[in-house]
Image 1 (tube, rainbow, N blue to C red):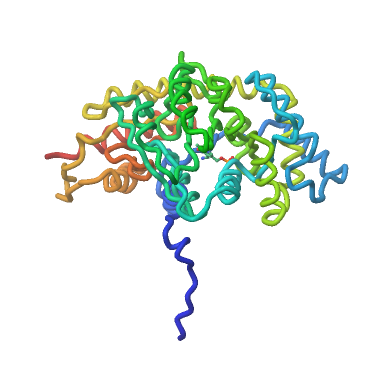
Image 2: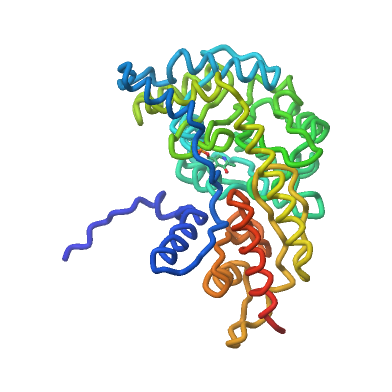
Length: 404
Ligand code: PMP
């Protein structure tokens, strides 16, 4: 058979999303009858609130089943602008909002619309698995800056200053952070903003998708609230996936300077055309309707977070930076690397440990190396407390079976 070249070099240069891959393996194991508990996926376990589903249904019956403007409907963009004013005290017009098929697609649009081949994007690590590959797919070069646990997994102004080159195009922030759960304070953002003021050609992307899930005493603050002088070159990324348990609806939004938003919209007009009209009607109801769900879900994540933190702190050898937000715990598992299984197999990396936890402990997690830092595992607590109790017991027992 002729060997036809299928994959472009760009696609060869990226990996499948590792959390989705691990989750797929976990689902296969469940299908084979294995009692796996999946803590690998960053997805609320709640159903979308009924009033949102109902609004989507009514919209369909009313004929809102056609293409919309590439940027999204006027009504939804206005509702997003209202959300920014109401919740973040930020003024955007509807023309400064772009609606996408999930925040993920808006990231793709932002980089596709702005990067030239070889342009650099500064990404503090640990970072969400997709950032670096979305940059690569669009011809950019991810410049990963290691932010170890000793500095709270946060970028320092000195590190930021040292990372700039002639090719720097974007700097990315993600607070609350996936995978570490850390939240930048207003002062920390302001100090980073001071550095950015000295680099007027650089754009800033602030991924705020976990905005509503603050677990402790550190309040969420939008990057633009902390650094108003940078509003004109910052894209704020957010969406309804996490706040309203709407991952499958694929609906996200971005706010930013009009020229950037227009570039995103132009690109969208030639790619997906527009986000789903039905999902847009649902998102409108989510943003304009009662917000009880958001409060109740956050209270539940807080209770689960406390359970998970307590359990992890009681496992000898694991250390944990207590998460401020999102629904992840990111314990350090370095003490277990270099140990052996009862069968004599050496566990030398976090990936091998995650595999062992899945095969022996029947718990799916994601290795830190997938987020650009070795020696950690990420556990999602977007699952019931009963599941979490069982899963953490299994993790404790499986780790205890390892020896020097
Ligand atoms: N940003 C971060 C940090 C995320 O964790 C996720 C989802 N895992 C997204 C963006 C994308 O969300 P969506 O595409 O569902 O809006």
